[in-house]
Amino acid sequence: MLFNSFAFLLAFLPLALGLHWLVERFAPLWRLPLLLVLSLAFYAYWDWRFLPLLMSSILVNWLIAEGFQKTRSGALITAAIVANLLVLALFKYFNFFGDLAAMIPGLPAPKLDLALPLGISFFTFHHVMYLTDLRRGQAPRYDLVRYGLYIAFFPQVLAGPLVRWREIMHQFEERPYERPDAAERFGRGLLLLTAGLAKKVLIGDPLAEYANPVFAAAAAGKVVSVVEAWQATLAFTFQIYFDFSGYTDMALGLALLLGIVLPQNFETPYRSTSIQDFWRRWHMTLSRFLRDYLYIPLGGSRSGLPTQVWALFATMALGGLWHGAGLTFVAWGAAHGLALIVALFWRRAGWPMPPLLGWLLTFLFVAFCWVLFRATSFEAAITIYKGLFGLAPLGTGFKWRALLPAAAFAIIGPTAWALVHRLTPSRWLAVVAGVLFVLILFKIGEDANYEFIYFQF
Image (cartoon, rainbow, N blue to C red; front, side, top):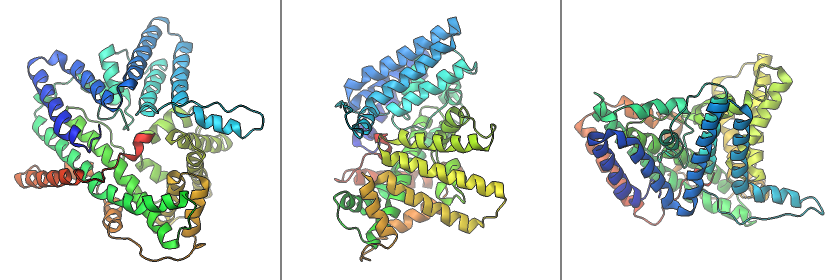
């Protein structure tokens, strides 16, 4: 079920919060098993056929971790990580690699008609993080319930944030409603949930009406005008931010309602003055994962400049592939890798970069790269790029009403997390939040209610 759906907001969430309060109050030892059951039920609502995959993934990886505790065999962990990645590749990349093989004359191109399990990329990476740290001697042993909850916790199982075990496991042992600030944390959780819903439903979804028809026209081989290309590119640039950061705010708010603090994932990324700064602010938990579990193991910055250049490019290209099984995603990641390499040489040369110019170049580069991310093919992307660079009819009717407030919120800020923690609890704030929540429910009741963009990854 979607966070922005009546089924979740008016049925599952009240039921989950009510059961959680009762168990926390009268049977605290059952709190974690309850949260695990709720999380599995939430996941099964999408498609119950994938629940055994998630449950077996949890059980097998936990048993391997148990075996490692006894044998201390690093090969066991390596085999487990490879197996996790192979399962991900089977569901997400089998046909992609089959299509690549079909480009070579004479090679067969097998196809598998498999549905992509929701959240498989995210829960696979959670397994990888824990198992890698376990082999390094950094992660302790956990029982099956706690490990299962770490993997399947419903606020973050489908689209993150990517949570490290050390950021969450200790919180499972707390009595959240016995804290002196329990009521305040619960209230801030409700505000975060409402803010995330507002970003998704009231800002992000209307931008889809500006972007989707233009990208659909490009995919159909139609000519896209200059005005349409800029409208669609800017609209998707802000849509994906409000869509994904809105989901993250909801996830953080929902977790806070249950007494868990999840890490932030966005810090006004469109205010960045360099491409490095952008990746410190955009999808921050993924950036940390790529840095610590891919870039550094590939050599990082400690093995000389050639190795660093290779590690940057490979990390970002693989990060692009993680986002989607398509060459356009690889190209998107590779473009960011090349930009990081250029920025590396710029810094080493000691050349200055005025902040305003750095912001403009970074924003335009990121926006242009989003075309690769959104387009269904290179041909469709080229059609959009022709419009962006003036190689198409000028066109008329630039739609700006939804773009203007979106740009102001995205660039000026603040983030929902900062705003919610800056506001002082008061009755008027509760009234405003309540009215906003009702308006969102009315909006959700309309026909246009889009899924989250990152659910497909």
